[in-house]
Length: 330
Image: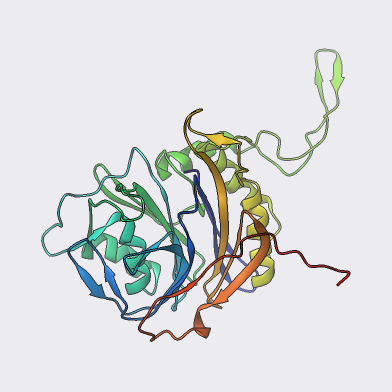
């Protein structure tokens, strides 16, 4: 599942978290608003009413939200990406800690934390990620996470063999394995990438003129390593966004650089095709959640504060089924 996430800060102080969701099917994903104190199953045996509301994309199974990303009422935003081959969950909770399944960890953080400091404290001191099969996927999904808040900082959290790793002061990008620390080290190989066309140079007795184009050396494939490099440098080289709307537009353009088209990526000839079935962008300050999906490139938006955050039921908003086109002759 080749997903990519990126965090941005606009010139007027808005914090944006955006992501592609790439999978071999949409699993009936829908926009979900989870009200305050809505019962959520932290494990198959434990259901709790948690204090904060949030909006995001996910799947409802047995009247429970199984979230892929989301933004809460305090401006905390988060995503989960596959961390296959590396994610490790405990068999049971550590003493004094609350057991939370890996696939419910995002919901737990959005429902209980206001800031990145509180997220870090939760993963360090309050919860243990425990093994459990997802009611949607029918397997225990191996996940890692990225969170942002109104500070604009992006924090990466990875449950590894030797414990939960928390990376503060990150480069603001998350893809898939290897571990985040490996990706950050790998950036050292690409420090010479520039927006400028390379200069002419003499080789032997011949002056060689460049063929043009900036970004020389950026990898273009869809591996997690290449997507991490590409997104990190696109984020670095792009002109800063001035406002929230500019930031969302920039985020969607950045995500286009890692967008997976149907037919271009598959694990094997017999496996399902992976593709980017939706892209989202969340603004911490406004509480607005933007998204577009594979069959409709036009942005839709929902504002968390406009819903009844003390409702007793989940709110689900299905996607449109086809491309929404603005007819200029209508």
